[in-house]
Length: 225
Image (cartoon, one colour):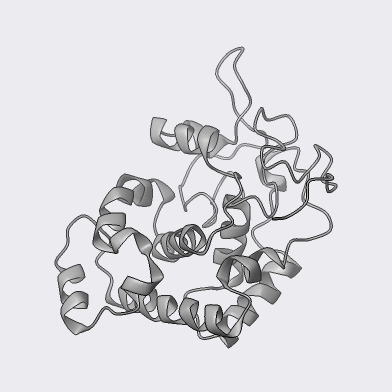
């Protein structure tokens, strides 16, 4: 991720180049993208980097990151409740049962991004989630098993990577398991969003919010569930 062309971690939001994070005068330091809209600021302050350990939550985040591909994260956040309603709370058991009628319903639903390939991928990914439950270890456990030994410790927006060796490996494994729209950039976005890595700037008030990472990027003593 850079401050010029943000990756799926935060949405592909075009902005003027900036080498540092941003803050209101005298206020907390945030990534530059988080100041572009109040909705992004709330997401940054309340949710980005907070751990998600359940299959439904991880499936929702993975699905939204996939829908974001080629768009801005703000576009997704603005439609998030519509996505949740259209995909029945992202319960993989229910989504896995969607058929052609549901695909057409979703293509007509103005509350979401009406992209056939992404809609069909979400349904097939839900079916892959159920296979993971049957075969083990489950989606959340699989994703968290790729937690690195160290997290980035970015000083500036430009220091935040868009992929990692772990995201490449996890993307490959997810594809092997039947998932689609899970490239290494999308997967790294997911890892940042749910606290598997800490992509907050080192001087951000949100650095370390997952409880798993120190300011310097080393693991804390907090055990995984």
